[in-house]
Image 1: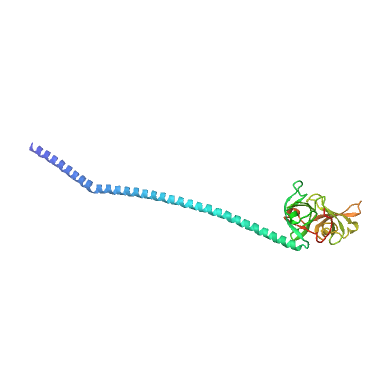
Image 2 (image 1 turned 120 degrees about the horizontal axis):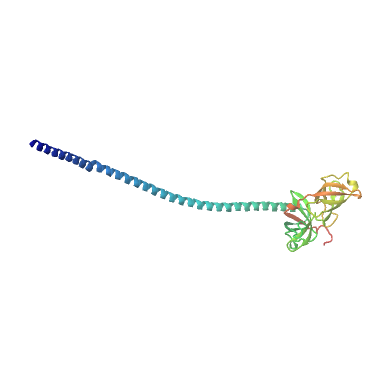
Amino acid sequence: MEKAFFFRIDSDLFTFIVFLLVSSGLLVFSGGELIVSFRDVGFSVTSRVEKAAASVSFFVTHTVKTLKTLSEVQRRYEVLREQLKDYEFLQGSRESLRKENQRLRAMLGFSRELSTRNIPAEIIGFDPDNLYSGIVVSRGARHGVRKNMPVVAFQSDTLGLVGKVVQVSRTTSMIVPLYHYQFYVAGKLERAQYRGLISGQGGSDFPLLMRYVKKHGQGSIRVGDLVVTSGENYPFPKDVPVGKVRDIKLHDHETSLELSLDPVLDLSRLEYVFILDLSLSQEGPHG
């Protein structure tokens, strides 16, 4: 019976000792390494959160600055584009002025080339009632223009006949062009010297006609020969180029030749003309 009691006491003691050891170990572990690990984990998590927050803050700040920069770049781009438009406009205006200056210089040079007093004029329109039947120019009575004055022009340095003045207002005049069916001018072949009467056929798409050319001149007249004014009918001076021979016709029932002429000037491309004043050098009836 004593042995049983001794065994029981030893078992309780052993259990107590084991419990004490386990508790001490847990206490040591909890109070030291485990607590340190928890602190390390908390510090690591806090550091990561702070880094993430810093990254987000940097991204937002950088994005805002970038947007501001882009906005400033866009504003400067718009300013530069407007400046470029102004520059292109100025360049265009400068180029237009340069070309206009060249035209005016050319006009002045052509005007001086003419031996007859003349009035330079700009073409500003056509007869509204019948396109191409009349050419309207920017000079009128106040500039010295009178009815029946002959009109010439230069094109590619070539002088040619345009027509004559038929209507005059204070500041503008109307010219009947040489291809009008009511226009007539005496002409001659510059090389062969045969004469005839030149008239239009009502439009710029048709050649001029030179009629009443002597029949025996057929052998000496050639395609491409130049025809000029003969000066035999008022108000046209002589030796003004009119056209070049395109075709030569001899009708069986007629005793004269009929020549088709291509005008030396393309009137549809003219911008300026010269109205000739022959009043000081030639007398004639004024209509």
